[in-house]
Amino acid sequence: MTITPTAVPAPLLAVMRNLARTHREHEKYYGRAPLRSAADVQEMSVALKALADRWRGISPAENPVHAAFAGADDLNAPGLVAATGILFMESEGKPAEISRVERDIAALAADNQQTGTWLSTAMENSWQAASALAGFPELADVLGERHRIVANDWQSAYLLLLVARLLRRALDLLARVDFTPAALRADLNGERYSAQFLYSAAELLDRAADLIAESAMLVHDNERRWRVFLNRVDALALPIAAADDVRSPKS
Image (cartoon, rainbow, N blue to C red; front, side, top):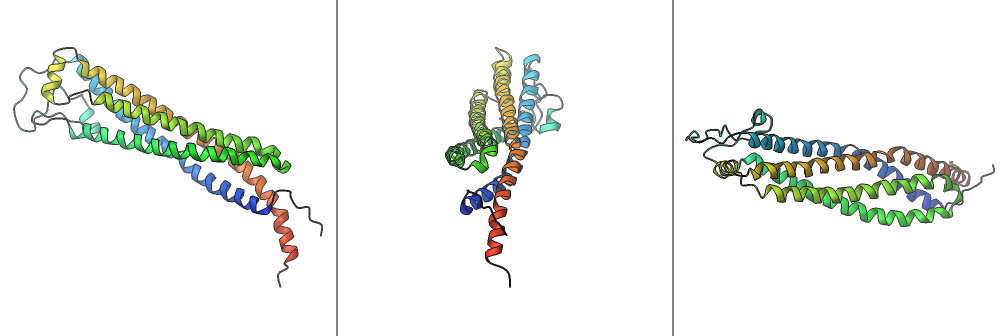
């Protein structure tokens, strides 16, 4: 039996096979999970714009209902209470749901910052490691696929870092708004800056949602590339496995 072994060392093939299989599976998740985050961010933006639309056009109540937990009818956007739970009440300050939106934005910013930082560092190392593969002619036709995987993930990392910046700046703008009913009515009797801050914060959230989705698309683009690369590694490993079987026949 004649065996023609590959020039790629068996230990290197084992490492490449492990990385390709593991990260292909990992990226199956990250090719779709961020889409849920993008939808969540978009929902937050829709809520803020609904409030801004309401506050831009209404006249504030001159004699609001003075009762514990009474709704501030002039400040609440039609349909928004049922959809999001955001409810302005006369006896309360900032709605708890607004505070929850702010906490969610802050958490998403931290998550994207962490993921983007880790992924950027990982791709720096992967880019350097991929350069060594050019020394093996057997991998020549899949080097483009491997480098494109790194490039996609690297671009995704930078998008996530930008997402974190956009989300944090949206929080900065929301912090400019006093969400207590009295302060909002005073603003609505004046320049209506509250609505403008909400519009601007929503625009930043919209862009963040778009970039989150784009990052998922980049990772999803790697699926076929990982498959092509893994198939080549498996093909190169077969002669070595066959040679090992010849050298160590089963009794």
